[in-house]
Length: 169
Image (cartoon, rainbow, N blue to C red; front, side):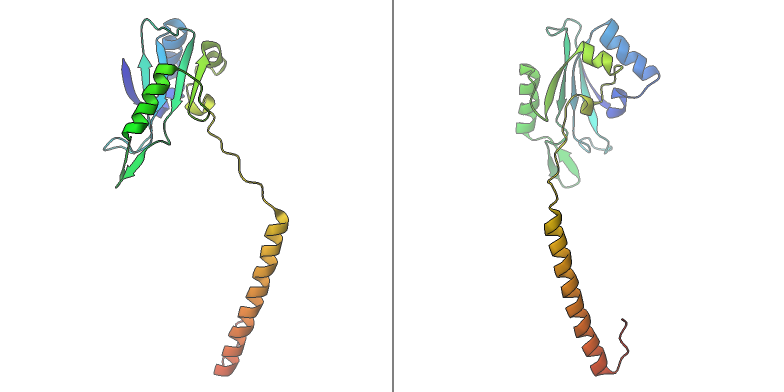
């Protein structure tokens, strides 16, 4: 069975937390969690996910996490999964392999360590390193901007003097 649900069911506590724990720890039904892009269904812009549940799982010792939230095409005001995006999800599901920034096979022990929280970013790292800032380059650029500002201010002051207007600076 595959259920389309809002992302909140993956991490909210209370009754939903108990249901997750029961489905994973007690029944071992959860086979995969697939994160979909936001705004993919008409009438709602929230991000959604697909939970794949199976009674007799071939891979009973783990759960597959797929983050397909960044793989879509924007068509007017709606996000759409392209055939290539769907194929990528299906291939990742069938092969059950770890793919950097896309999929992760989590052993049940890892899920238990996370208190049965299924929030996809806990399992699929999509963090992008930021480029290092060169302070010398930034400092030089700021000094050049300051020189341009002074030149512009001098030009404005000359025009104001020519027009007989007091300069604002």
